[in-house]
Image (cartoon, rainbow, N blue to C red; front, side, top):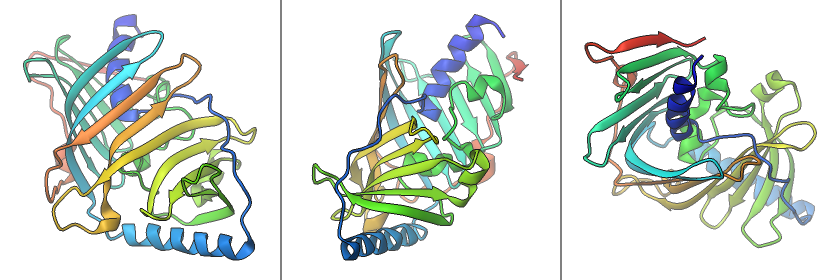
Length: 279
């Protein structure tokens, strides 16, 4: 695989996948009395259950800012998503013209680099794709990562503790499917009980090493009159690995009542573009 492809793919995948192996440490916590733990867990489960009634799609403008030792820059465009795994990003040049497309259904992906007149496609299990989606990020749950929510799967909660800075409760938990990732993945979720939203979501391996660290802020309604528990984050912030990268996605101008079908996430190559399969 040539260097031009890797540079091009990096530009697209960081926008959609958001994640790189993290160097953060596990959060500090303070213990809670047993009754407080039970009350916090009950409210958390109730919130997650109500969110299953939220709209399954969103469409928003997005601005991505990346700062690292290797590169700095900003790109704007549009992001569309449909639960559980459909995502599409359209990046625009300064004149407002499309310069790249990246789409995935959770199984396959396609990346189109307009200046190169090339398209790349393959499975999300391909080495080139997984290079930018470390263990802990599941493409099958892509919508929920961007929406600041947990996937509607069975949860096992191991502990509930207080955030020492007063930001809410930390819950250590796992999806039933986390067992398939080696049996030791643990999620650490910072739950804000006042706003009933997730403020932070980390995934750690058996050694406590953070593989994914995503922070959410500026929650807002995507459409007027929407349910309060269906607010979406206006800021998704990712602190990356030892290169010190910080990635911020600022979302806004939500399209009210967005609705998509699987076909809306199909990206066709323009005439004359070369299609490159990715292994």
